[in-house]
Length: 328
Image 1 (cartoon, rainbow, N blue to C red):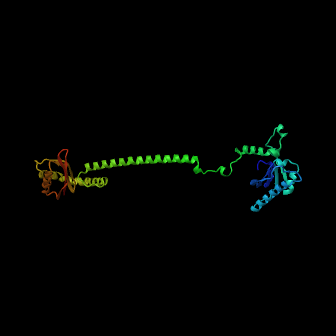
Image 2 (cartoon, rainbow, N blue to C red):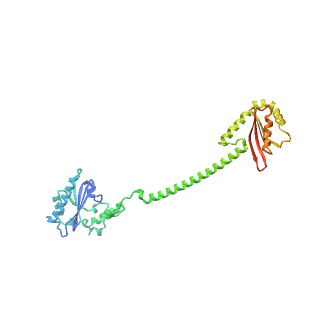
Image 3 (tube, rainbow, N blue to C red):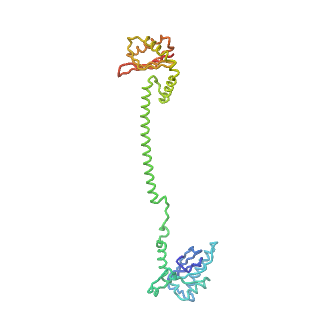
C-alpha cells in the first residue's frame, strides 16, 4: 500500500479494481493488506450513474465481504476510504455510485501524483491512471524490492528451507566430518607410536635392571625394586658406618681368602661389604665350585649365614655366574 500516496492518512481502507470482466477487492488494516477477493461479473457491465443491476450486485458483494470479515475479527477498524482503479473507474459517475452504496469516501487512484514519479510530456497526453496504474505498480514494486511479482502459488510456491537442509550446511558438515576423521586418524597414530615407545622403554628398563641387579630373579616392578635397592645401598654407605667398618675390612678379606683354596677356578668381579652382610659376585667353572665356595665360607665364624643368591650359566663363555650373600 506504500505505492499509494493518498493512503498516507488512511490506516484502513478498500482498494476496488473494476476490470472488464471481474472486480478485485483489496482490504487493508493499519496499512497492511489483510484480505483480497475477486468477483467475476461478466463483460459489458455499465459502471456509470445510475448504477446498473450487475454493478449494484458487485457493490453489494463488496459490502457483504467487508462486513463478514468485520464479524470474524474483533479488532477490525472501519475503512476510512475507498480507492478506485481499473477500466470501470474511468466511467463518469462511478465514484459517486460507490461512495453512496458503501457509505465511504471514494476517490480514484493516480500513482503519478507522487512527486517521486515523473512522466514525459508526450506520455502525459495519453496517460490514463485507471488503465495504467496496475502495470506501473508492478514496475515500482520490482524497483523497490528488487524482486518481481511472485506467481508461484499453492504447491508451486517458494518454500523457506531449513538451514539444516541447505547446501551451505551440507558443505560445512562434510568439512567438519573430514576434519574429525583426520583428527581421529592423527590421534590413533600418535597413540600407537607412543605405546610402541613406552614398550621399548620398558624393555630397556628391564634389561638394565637385570644387568644391575642379577641377584633378583623375581621382577614385578623394575623401577620400584631398583629404587629399593638403591636406597639400601645409600643406607649402608653412610660415612659414619663406613668408618666404623674399615677396621675389620682387611680381616674379612683375609678370612674369605683363607677359606677359598688357591687351586679353585674362581674369579671375583664384585665385593660389597656393609655392616650387615658381604656380597660376593663373580664367575667359576662349574656349579660344584659354587657349592664348594659356599661350604668353605660357612665354616668361618665371622659369618652367621651363607646363601647362594644366584647361579646362572653363561653359555657364551661357558662359565657359571654366581652371587653369594654372607650374613654378619
